[in-house]
Length: 232
Ligand code: ADP
Ligand code: MG
Image (tube, rainbow, N blue to C red; front, side, top):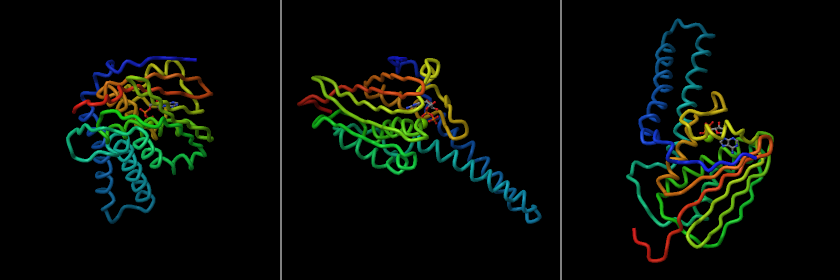
């Protein structure tokens, strides 16, 4: 079993996240616009027309994937800290991903501790767990079990996300969170985990990953619990 306490500090690149992301969205859009321009030519043969349309579709999908990994919950607002009910926020994310889980024949089980709140930005918290849970589902192309649970100790909240998917080798674990690191080819952005690390760092959390190739992966997130009387 490979175990690693991932240091969120190693991702200084996260500071340039916004710039990198807009670049990643602009490139496919520019390509799509170029091919739409070519499609305007009336004498373009049918086979070329079909080919270009295909490229336009792929480029737009690529832009959409980047947006999903980064901006699913973003409204054009500044960071807004509030008291988050962990169970409620995670339930919302799970509901969004339920159709994807069904498509992958993935069964979801949850075990939420009753109460407990943390302090954070709701959109970012949801984006973080959307990316993690989506990866877990995508790691089980032939179906499997996804379990999500929370626990509270005196000072911390622990969120555990486990899958019975393909797992990661030690080398793969080390690359996790590096910008553009993906094993999904054209279907991946390699930005999802980078966003996760950035958000967890901003929330003073930690990430631990246990993974076994061919058996599955468990992510454990720890966040400081919101204390009674804590002021914003
Ligand atoms: P993407 O999902 O677009 O590939 P991410 O940054 O979200 O990019 O993830 C990077 C890589 O980390 C994935 O391509 C995959 O190889 C690996 N990974 C992340 N989560 C898991 C998981 N639960 N099980 C197996 N591999 C994972
Ligand atoms: Mg991903």
